[in-house]
Amino acid sequence: MNAKRITTNQELEQAFSIRKTVFVEEQGVPLTDEFDEFDQLDGRCEHILAYYEDQPAGTGRIRWVEGVGKLERICVLESFRKFGLGKVIIKGLEDIAAEQGSSRVKLHGQTQAEGFYHKLGYQTSSDVFMEDGIPHLLMTKELISEGSLEG
Image (cartoon, rainbow, N blue to C red; front, side, top):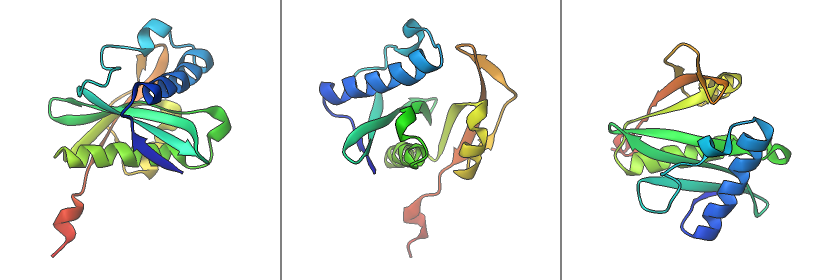
């Protein structure tokens, strides 16, 4: 299991395929809502792919909103769930945020995943709101700089 930054259009297409399967086909998100102007390799956000036994199995992206890293489009294909890939994706995105100097990250998590995000150190920071017909919560986390622990 590992996650890597997406650097090629082929990898980006693999991520799009995963997102289409999970969000559009499984959860009923309209195709026109799932993909947006940030779905490019132009530096406005960073995308990652998570692999299980060399198979692309999950994805996520991070973009910066008002100086805060916003984790988005986090998903894992159904047949690869329960292997810990969600945690790998979140850690990869948090690492990118830390590299970019962000001390805080946030995300809009589906309510059914609230416990998962709590286990990873996120706090619920809003009441439930609807996004693409699915109940969500704003979740936030302060990142600890690993460099500050060295002496």
